[in-house]
Length: 333
Image 1 (cartoon, rainbow, N blue to C red):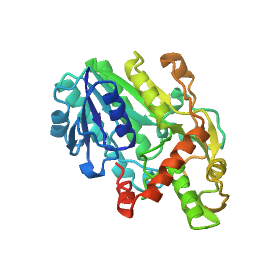
Image 2 (tube, rainbow, N blue to C red):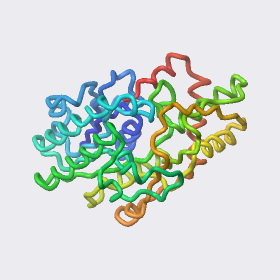
Image 3 (cartoon, rainbow, N blue to C red):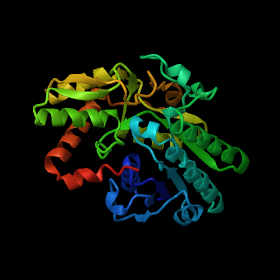
Image 4 (cartoon, helix red, strand yellow):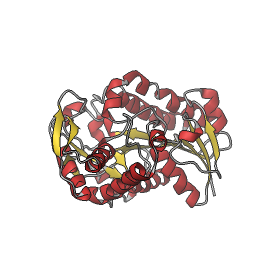
């Protein structure tokens, strides 16, 4: 049994991670900026703190007597949120910086940082159905403005804390994680959840079309939460100290994903393309060669199998919960 801190425990990935650590017999301290009632998953057996980790004193407080830290905390959302809140996203650099400082002060043994595929050079993502991005494709640096720069800078901070202070650090570059307990409404949701919600509501209300941001030809890979957790924990427990892709190699267009969800829903919709909406890079996918080599990990869920589970969960939330419960999922960081 070990003592862990999960920063961002009230969020999507953080909540699932806390549950996994508890199931494996560990003690967990949970911290998140959101009020406790807005946490996606809440566990009474943890020490739970609602506070701002951009503050160094708060980082010292929650990391006291902790052996290991998972930093999943940042201000983020789907492409619409990222493109319209660049400064707010970049302020998350204070969380990582102050948690790293607190880790030294409190003699933490190992530190994990959740980075993003948004660190990758934009010029390598200008076409659809590109080759999967390898870890060294992050340089020369041209990441997503705002959010991507914060992630790339924070990766460097972890690297230098390892080199200069011998703090064991691990860095995962996540590629579009989705699944139950993820945001599906309110402006911060990502494409799989947003499209599931739109098709569910179209079917319920007998609407024949849904709005699609962009032309639907932009491509991405999407990773189911269970695969994410397995890769995260394997990386954390490994000896690999570089940045590592944790993502899926199954690249699809947004149009193709809509067709998959329509098949799951047994309801065909027309696509109303909104060409003035944020749409991000043209193509992005993961190359998992290094993950297979260094931590013996790869995804096991196909996109369709993961979407089936996600669709059912979102359907149940919409059908069985009141508007007040749906509003819970709009406050997502």
